[in-house]
Image (cartoon, rainbow, N blue to C red; front, side, top):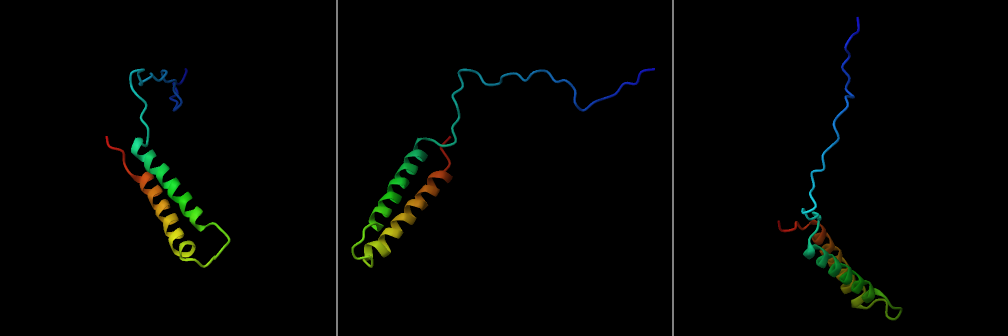
Length: 87
């Protein structure tokens, strides 16, 4: 007498391809997110450029303005990443 065993590893039919060639790829970010991210990279680079140099290391530009510009660039980068694209 043969016993019928049920297995959790049953053979399943091959998964059907649910994407059609006409469906465009869905990206996480849209064009505006990329623009904001590129602008944020430029702002951070500008802040580091303002911070560079060897003369007068205690100038207001190097101590106050440049770090604020760098932090603003990083903040803009976070906004660019976290902003939801318009559906």
